[in-house]
Length: 560
DNA sequence: AGAGTCTCAATTAGCAAACG
DNA sequence: CGTTTGCTAATTGAGACTCT
Image (cartoon, rainbow, N blue to C red; front, top):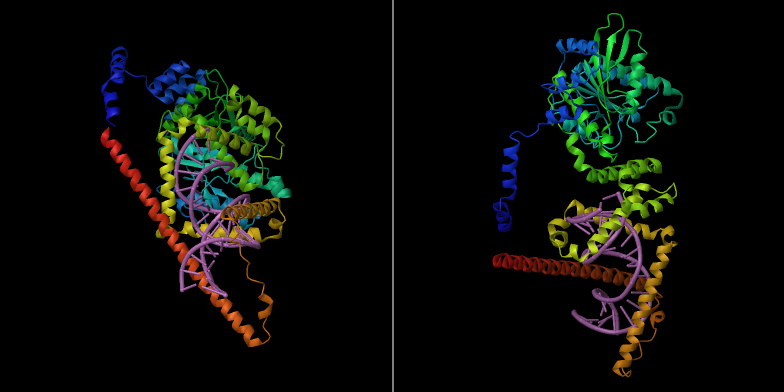
């Protein structure tokens, strides 16, 4: 501790800061950073975005559109409260108009063949029916705490969490899935056909109508993901009364092959009715596609402008841009997440897709050898699991180094493991649910070994061999001991007199059975006592050890 | 003397934490 | 997530050991 303070007193960072302050009295704000990056201008994010628009008339139209009042019925409930209601049998209410619209959709889906087992997997839009901003996502997955009767703005899902964190208050935001059916994530999309066969078209139509209603009832929208980007243009292009007008921007890249903004006009009056932004899906921020700084900045700009114009408070102006350094760690979280889905569904992620997600990581020269091995992996084997195992090998290598073993982290782990063992040995822990689960597991293990399948398995054979080996070792040891003692002692064992007492009368038989039962009972009592004693000894041993180490630490600290 | 316990080995399953 | 260590308990069985 004192060391740290001394380091701080060395005032190296302080000196640097003073120098920095002298040269640069004002640190670059995030808005300035965005402006500089796109050579743009403006006093806020909305103005900066407008300054990027190439067509002057289009820009003026948008400015006129922005002067209109935003009509909205914000919700007044806690929008994530539904996550706590684990056994609810219907969807949480945010807004009565939305409830009406939603039950209508549910009825339509029921009408085209959905039964209750599928209905409960539907995810209802969050927020008001009449919203200032609409965030349109693609479809919900099983990566959630609330799989039945869930809502779209679900912060227990890694992707939706991005919206939850970016936006401080979603009460004016309608967050909706184009396809509200919970499906296992797949690169090919939801694949309705396999589930709904002949009804697919009807179902898709219901979803599309609802999605279109969401977009056309809000003045501003953010549409997420490549599939949605294509679909939304299609839906609105197909409307006779509407005109989709691309907004050309002065930026050096495209999103989904286009500019990330369109305005929707009334075909007759050419008046702007909606402004729609396109954004990468949350998954894009999770995986290690090389995150070009400008793309991240543009996402912040789009979301900030959309929020500003619709009167929605932003939590972090630079939320997407600031994530850059977090990507390596998030890649692992992402893989764990995907592996979780694999295990749950039993469906293995396509190797090609996995390679894409990992492309950044795998392209590093130190992994070349591993990449070669990965190429040979049979396609029915999980790529994710293989990668995790690879990571695990590296983790073991680290732990095998003297450096790690002597580190504080290693000491922390040793202490923690001791502490864990001590808690497991306490009476309190043994009464806990975890202990019960463990006991159940022991039973389960026993049951497994009782099966014919296990007994005929290779593992069982290995066990039998090991037992034989153990016995042989013991026999050899005995022989050596006997020889060492001089051999004379080895006595005649008692003869086999078992058969002689074979009962001839029923009474004798029952008495023998009784004796046997008594013996078993006595044995059980003894066992229990023995377990209790060993438990007490263990607790004492561990506590003594912990106390000893604590004392040592105390002493060494005192010396320092 | 006889009842009860312990020993060797590997395996089942779970828990406590750490790392990648 | 997957893997590690060292603990919980049980199983196999024969022989040695301990307690009553």
